[in-house]
Length: 271
Image (cartoon, rainbow, N blue to C red; front, side):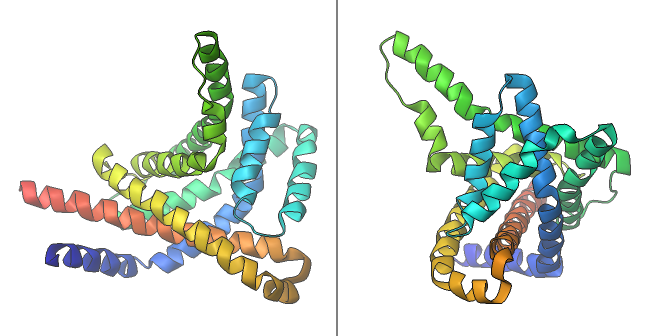
C-alpha cells in the first residue's frame, strides 16, 4: 500500500513539475483548430479507399457528439455543411488543411517530449510527417465498423451469428478507440523510446479515465447546460467541446506520466 501511495505521489508531483495543466491548455487549443480539418481528411481518406465515406463520417460524428448532452444538432449541422463542401478545396487548400490538422499532434509531441524528458526534439519536417501519418492511421481505425460488417456477413454463411458490427458501433468502440489511440500516440509521437507493455498500462488508465470523465461530463452538463447557454448563447456547444478537449488532454498527460514513471522505475531497478 505504501509503495502504491508513493507511486501516485510521484506521478502527481511530476505532473505539476511538467506544468501539465498548461500543456493540456495548449493541446486543447490546437485540438479545436485541428478538429474540422482532421474530420475532412479522415472522410476524404476513407472515401478514397472505400469509394463511400458516409458510414465512416457517421462513426466520426457519433464519437464526437456522443459526449455532448445537448447542442448535438448545432454541431452536426455545421460539420455536415463543412464536409459537404470539401470537394471545393484546391491543392493549396488541401495542403493548408493537412498543416492545420497536424497542429494537434505537434502539440502532443511537444508535451510528451517534456514529460519523457527527451534530450532532443525532432526537426520540423520529421515532426509533421509523424503527425500526418498518425492522422492517416487513426482515420483507418474507423474502417473497423465496415470491416466488422463484412466479417459478420461472412460468418453468417458458415452458420455463425455474431453482431460484431453492432458491438463495435456500441460503447465498446469508444473504449477500444481510446486505448488504441493512446498506445499508438505514446509509442510513436514523442521522440523517446517507449516499451509496449508500459504504454499498455497508460492506455488502460487513459481508457478508464476517459470513460469516467465522459459519464461525469454528461451528468454535469445535463444540469449545467442551461447556465452555460445563458452565458455563451449559440456557441455553447463549442464551449463544451473545448472543455471536453481540456479534460481529455489532462487525462492523456497524466496517463503519460504513469508510463514515464513505470518505465523509469523499471530502468532503475534493472541497474
